[in-house]
Image (tube, rainbow, N blue to C red):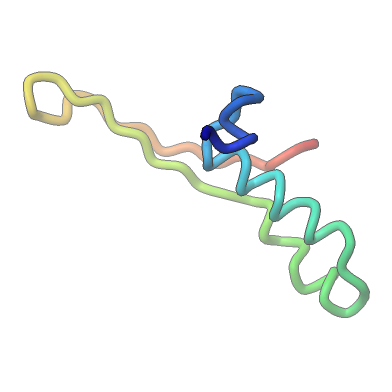
Length: 65
């Protein structure tokens, strides 16, 4: 049995980001205000070839709906 989020073409990271966004949207004040900055994320990626890192990139993103 495959998880439903995988059946619709999501990976776990995308699924967890959607869940976190929904939870933050339904929070009541003052919790909503304190969680507003958590939509920002920084992602570091690395390309590997022959067992060694050949290229790295650091990117920041504002998660959108």
